[in-house]
Length: 355
Ligand code: ZN
Ligand code: ZN
Image (tube, rainbow, N blue to C red):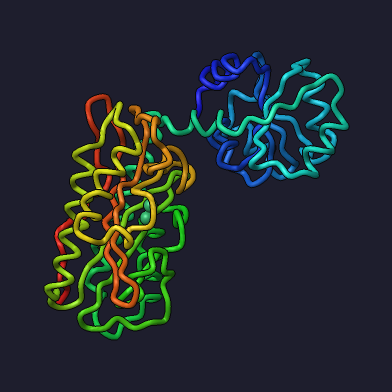
C-alpha cells in the first residue's frame, strides 16, 4: 500500500495539486480499499474515497486515512468533490479513462485543468515496500507448493486442463484469493506457444510440459514458470532446456540495483542467439509484477536507459519456442534489493523428468 506522502511528493514534482485515481489496482494501492467500485481523489491536503452505499462500511475500515464520501463517482459526486478541493491542476490516467468519462467531467468542472498523467502511479507502484514484497512472497510460496504437489499428477493420459484445475484448487485452498492469471499448461507441440492456455489435450510420454502459474494474496500476484519432461528427455530436449537455463541463470547473475533493464535482457538474448535460437525467443526477458501481473519495469530492448532500483519486483523468463516441436520457458520472480536481488521462486530449476 501507498504512503500518501509519496503520492504528494510526486504531485509536487509535476506541479500538480491533485490526482483522480480510478483504476482498481491503483485505487487499492493508494487507499487500501479492495471493493469493486470507487474513485479516489488525493490532493496536497486531503484524501477522499468516493464509493456507493454497498461499500461505505468496508471503505471506512480498509482506508482509515481517507474521508469516505457516499455517492456514485460516475454521477455528480466526483466533480463536486474536485470543485470543493479548490485544486486547479488535477492529474488523471488517460490509459484508463474513457472519452465519455473525460468529456463529461471536463464540462462539469470550471477553472480546473485535467492533466493526462499516465506514468505517475505506474512509477510509484514499481517501487514496492517491504510489506508489499511480503505479500508477493506469500503468494509465491502458495503457488510453488501447488506446483510441487501437482507434479505427482502429471502422467500420460492426464489432460492439461485437469492439471490446471488441480493447481487452482491447491492454491485457493492454501489461501490464494484467486489466481493471478489463467494457468498456462502447454504440453508436447503446444509448448511452443508461449501463452498456450490449458486445453483438453492429453499428456503423452516424451512431452515437454510448460506450466506458468501465479497466486494472488491481498491483491498481490506471483508469477513463475517451469518446464518438465514426461519420461526421459531426448538429446534435443536436454540441449534446448540447458540453453534456456543458462540464459536464465546468466540474466540473474547480471541483475541488481542500477542495472540497465535492456542490458539484462541482452545477456539472456545473446546466449540464445549465439545458439542459433534468436528467432525462437520473441518476447521480452521479463516484466514488473505487483498488484497487476504485468507492470513496470519491463526487462526488454525498449527499456534502454531504465535502471533497476531496490523495491522493483520483476520476472526473469527467457524461452525458446520451436514451432511444430515444442518449447521451454523458465521463469523466476525476483525482488531487487540494496545489494542484489532476492529470488521469490523456490521450485527446482534442473530438468525434472517425470516417471
Ligand atoms: Zn509467467
Ligand atoms: Zn511472467
